Length: 427
Ligand SMILES: CC(=O)SCCNC(=O)CCNC(=O)[C@H](O)C(C)(C)COP(=O)(O)OP(=O)(O)OC[C@H]1O[C@@H](n2cnc3c(N)ncnc32)[C@H](O)[C@@H]1OP(=O)(O)O
Image 1 (cartoon, rainbow, N blue to C red):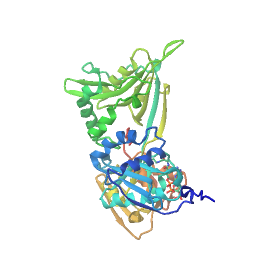
Image 2 (image 1 turned 90 degrees about the horizontal axis):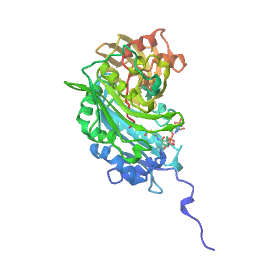
Image 3 (image 1 turned 180 degrees about the vertical axis):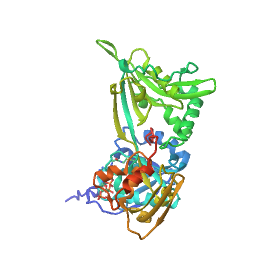
Image 4 (image 1 turned 30 degrees about the vertical axis):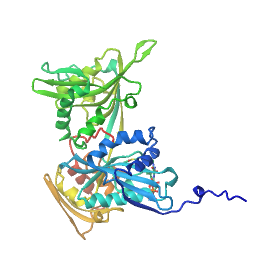
């Protein structure tokens, strides 16, 4: 009798090894990442998109999990060495990306081993923070990440899109509409000015600009080419909107659309000029803004803000890799003193009782044996770190324990920031 046994279908062995990869082997990581995230491209297409971003920073941070029996890559995790604006200013942040596990090898702990190794690597490199965009909000809290930023996806119907009569308008401003590459320097100038102070944004290097301005068919879909509306005065550019239009005709006439990939400005009048430009495009009945800061001026500038259909969605998740370092270097809106007991399943160096004595220019953060005023997880502090998510929210949900009444309110007052964090770019 012929032996029809096919080793492919033997019961899976449970062993895998996590290790670093290199530029050559990166294709196997991309194969796993592409399949697990349901990307439409084949590996070559995916690599063409990913390579420029990774070539710039090297491949030494990329991790893979390799099935020991089959020798196949079954899991991946990577991170970009970002220069990101945090409450303390621009600091190194590990921008976690490329996380995926081969579909037949899920729920055996592969991701957990990759996350543990990545966290150890980032900590050993002296980087105090990690940040990511999550495909699903249920994955990363267990690894110490907290959702620290929500952004707005907003749609506006043009008939209601005219700005308030008292919106700031500066006759010295001019809006030009150009192909983005022609005004790239202006875009870079404005972005750099905003990004340097906008918590949640990372410095945009050349490959990231190339990615932002990429206008191939895969990006364009059924819309027109990417255009840049730049607003400025004699002193230079003050804002821009990158957008595409889409023609659409219904029985009652033109129902065209404008899809705004990115909009930002450095003065109120520049914001207003950009909105005026977008809302006055003939044949456009709807304007889509998939990424706006939670405190974007748009909603204040509308005569009836109820006409803007806005959805808050979670964007950045923040992980305090070095809790004491992160809490020490951050400025605080009000003084805080207290002992916070922190659990951290994956970074034991963060776990313990921390005495925090914070003031406007930083904090002293030391281990102590004293009784805690508050007990929480490192993920709660990651969520609250950017000053938008409150610790009070977790308390109301019954997820943390306040031992000394008033501690949570005092901590929130100290962590508060006036401006909403905003990233706007999925990495
Ligand atoms: C930053 C980014 O790149 S975001 C992109 C993340 N990648 C994806 O979403 C791609 C599709 N999904 C996958 O590839 C995988 O399912 C992953 C990466 C999400 C999880 O990998 P796995 O190897 O299955 O995870 P692992 O077995 O280590 O599970 C760890 C824990 O997370 C839980 N978990 C894993 N995936 C999920 C999920 N999608 N939703 C909820 N819980 C999850 C597990 O139940 C387990 O819980 P426990 O610690 O309480 O036991």
